[in-house]
Length: 244
Ligand SMILES: Nc1ncnc2c1ncn2[C@@H]1O[C@H](COP(=O)(O)OP(=O)(O)O)[C@@H](O)[C@H]1O
Ligand SMILES: [Mg+2]
Image 1 (cartoon, rainbow, N blue to C red):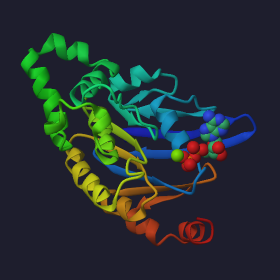
Image 2 (cartoon, rainbow, N blue to C red; image 1 turned 90 degrees about the vertical axis):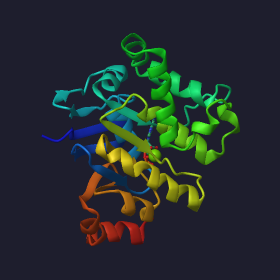
Image 3 (cartoon, protein in one colour; image 1 turned 180 degrees about the horizontal axis):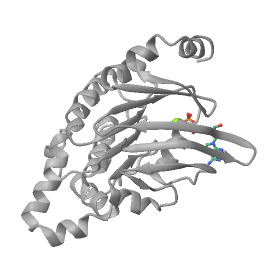
Image 4 (tube, rainbow, N blue to C red; image 1 turned 45 degrees about the horizontal axis):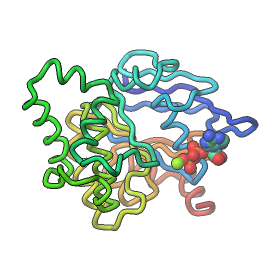
């Protein structure tokens, strides 16, 4: 059984159909890219998986449980973590405290406080920062980080509670080419403990880091398969060549 199974997921906003019955399966440890033209439903799908939007129809199973109706906090406790398109870093807090806050928001700070010593909690926060090259910025306010570093801080915040699946919606938007390359490099090692669903416009980036791609078009899955399958897909070429 796949780690995440989305079946027949639909979402309407009034008369507008954002998702028209989407199926998606993500295996443990898989890096799964979600691509498609603007407005094709990528963010809506991510929000439905995370519990930030309620689907109009369909089912979502995660780690063997039906979470279609589960509130976001319960999904987070089950091991689901998301970084939305819009930033959630608190600029006046230090880089360190932003990580602490993310642990609290995910409901895992209390567990960590009770089950570990203060030193172990500190090590946990520092390890989360080290992974994204932010350890030497720990005491600085998040506001003075560069755009790319703020994105990495957010990814570190999403990963700090040690999720089994991370959802990233356009994490490299606004990044320089070098920051993009580094992002791919920094995400690589998480594969051993966490699966990834990532929305990206940069096809070179997504080709480099993903095993499987799903292409959305107008709220439906146009095609899904390995990177090579999708590169050779006539249906996908048509959409990308004629409409994007
Ligand atoms: N909260 C909302 N209210 C109304 N329409 C929305 C809302 N969120 C998304 N939509 C619409 O749903 C469609 C899919 O949007 P979205 O999922 O953001 O696409 P993508 O992320 O692929 O660009 C678009 O037509 C968008 O305008
Ligand atoms: Mg979007």
